[in-house]
Length: 389
Image (cartoon, rainbow, N blue to C red):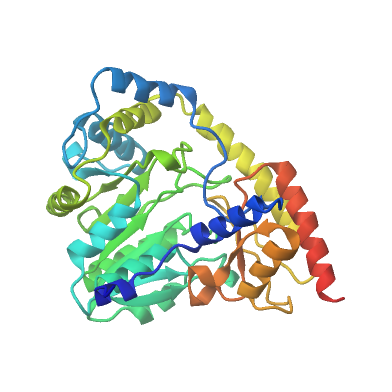
């Protein structure tokens, strides 16, 4: 078949490719420890599931408004107003099936051919993929290990041009677990207002922090009118398969996002939205317990990786990933990731899956049990030792 040339500009997400490969090996009888996929291994708590079931029984099974049910939009606006300290109206909320549509729709709505979009690198691969797909110019902004996987403000300044239309930020960050400081965000806000560009702030991991305070650029003076905030339920409430995300944006932008929803998904499933209302308004101790478990896993995996010769690993401030430096290993990082899958039965991702500045690193998700994490570390240590034989 002959396909549209735009399809050549669309990338993919390596985590799902590696997961598929791991599943094939498991089908052959191999035991694979999964540290590749960014999915909490916790079950969605019962009261959220029960809210969805009750919504089905109550008739929330048909089409709903493209921008989302008002019940959920109001619950989200209340949540964001409280957590970000800036008043948000329900009409400034758009509900989508997962968080990715907010990335896609924002770029479709804002970016013309040749417009420049600055994005974090290494970063979530969908950013670069969709920038290229819509005809924008992708401008990578290096996240640097020496500054705890943040970017330097001077690097951002150097990347800005008169064609800069949008900056994408992600804090806490995938794949590194890095966290932008309030000082960083203040400097970014000043640059955005000076150079008249918008900010897409991906805050999907905002609740998964370890003894840190989350700051949002939406909260800063002058930024509500030029920020599109992305958040959702997948990570915080272990609801990845529910496909429930949302964006906060100025009303003019909300109109565009709503129109794109009408032309693509029609609406987000109504009963999942009612589950979202329950998640936001119900007890939050389940989130705290999950984050506490993630913190124990983080500490265990960082300690174990730093005991492996040729590997060094910073302790991430948030999310549930580590991004160890493997530049002293006598294999390129993509070859090393393949080696660990084939020889050690441990599925991880190459740093280059997240962009050119990820070269020399791996991403490991610690959304797995302490027992499996410790077994994976032993397997990796043995496999690294065998490289010298």
